[in-house]
Structures are given as C-alpha cells and as structure tokens.
Image (cartoon, rainbow, N blue to C red; front, side):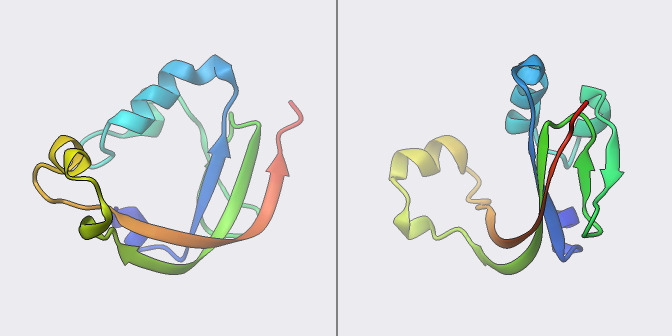
Length: 107
C-alpha cells in the first residue's frame, strides 16, 4: 500500500503457469512484512514508459498511470467477506489506471 501511495504508476504482470507457487504467495501474503519479489526469486526491472517496476519473468506486463483511487466501500460488501478478509476493518485502497504500455517478453 505504501509503495502505491508514493507512486504515480503501477504494473500488472502476467506470469506463466510455471509460477503458480509464486503467484499464490504474492496473492496471499502482505508485502508489508515480506519482500515478495525476493522470496519468489523475481527480478524487478524499471518500466519502459513509467517509473514503476515490472517482473522480468512475466510473459506480458501492462504499465499503468494512476488516474483515480478510493478506499473500498465496506457498505457494498457482503458481511461474510468483511468478517473473513477484513476482521480488522483495514479495507483496501482501490486504484484505477490508464494503460500506457503493453509489453510481451519473447524469451
């Protein structure tokens, strides 16, 4: 969350099925207490058109400029989701981006 707040851009990385274990780790662990890239053995590279970093091992990555953000509206969520995923009521910030570049790794 802190990295996103300090940035004007982000990337979306598409990884092959060879990285299922790493994808699971990234999707279930907080980056606040763990360097996800290092834990997964990913190489981070500065973007082609933004200052955001992308995963070199990704097959495709999208570079996006942040155009809007807002705090997740808890009133729109099912209470079971809140109890399961947000017991501390620490709701996510939702970011919207304009895609400014799409790149495919040919390796």
